[in-house]
Length: 503
View 1 (cartoon, rainbow, N blue to C red):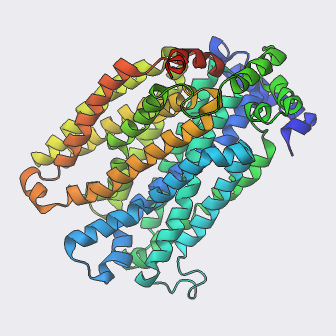
View 2: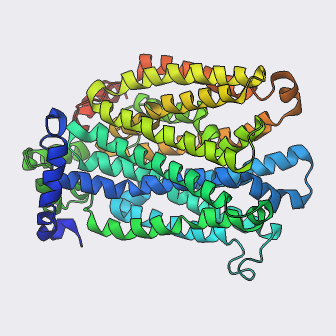
View 3: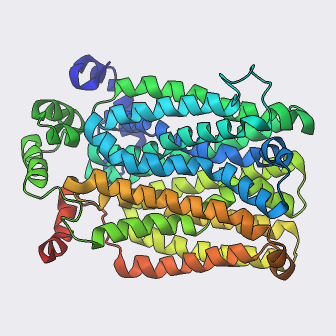
């Protein structure tokens, strides 16, 4: 059922709305926010859940994929490490494609239909990654000869991730009130970290089922296949949410946009807001550089820094990192669950405070925490200290990221771009993020397993690089990034007017 055409749907939410108001009693920033806003957001962020699950599930399968696909090829050690890195990061190629095409797809189809497309791609990838011999050989009989098929299915899933990573924050930012926008866009990152945590938990449980030979041949298939269930749920729930009112205005569907806005913006002058949105689209050239280079550079740099600080090294390679310090088998998978749990808990801190303290303070605090913990993590490897120190500094890094750069980067990227270029600009920023992710994921195993660097630094070198980049990001945020707390998307355009006039 479609919200914009079914008023009875809203009446079903009466008690839900009352519950939300009770939970938020005494909190001024959202005491007038209708419950439907939360329900719409909860549905949209299921894309973030799939994003998190799909990107992190690979962490529990790296050793199995190496054994199943790479080792039978007989590659020389360094070449094998490179191909293992490529197999792990292949989905990121699709992420880049999905992010770069997301702006055009969401402009043509609308935000909701584009999210439906991402759900379909998640489903196809989950089935194909679990059964790469599908349509080639009998199910379960595949071996290293279906390696290319596996990579293709992972790329398909990556396209879905790239779309979801851009669409969910953009959709939420366009449909929720400004006073809770930061917190609700942060819900998407919370869904991402829940997806990561669930993938770690699923990997751990599956890892306990059989012995190593079963895990090498079949266990990893179940890890990928489990994604089909949330993909199906996500697809069908998308039928229950409305299209973005700002996209509807862009397409000249003012009446539909007004119908949605009256339900989600009860305290706002809807006709006046529609006029503001139309003006933001209609009086500005739709060219990407309409507002100059600075807004694009800041958005892109935020995305690049978020990845170059090394978060996905921890998330993708956590079990392998723990194994490198002597943790065995399913215990390495269990410690990954702890990493996922810390990631999830500290994201809640960001959600509760992003509209309270603002975006910049959280990013600055997070940059210091990440820089310190990465430098100490590298030192713990270099000094060959007890493994507990590596675990502590890894958890400190994840906590610092989760309460700051994890959710807040997405909030800023969804907020800083003007209406007329938001789709295209977010595509570029998100693509920059996935390109950076690919670079980091591809280079980490090459650096970490380099014999010379192991001899000199004992696996610590890469973490020092990430720590230095985190400290550089502090300077970048301090000098260049604007605060967007409490501003409407239309008000943010005024910040870039001087750049527009210089063009």
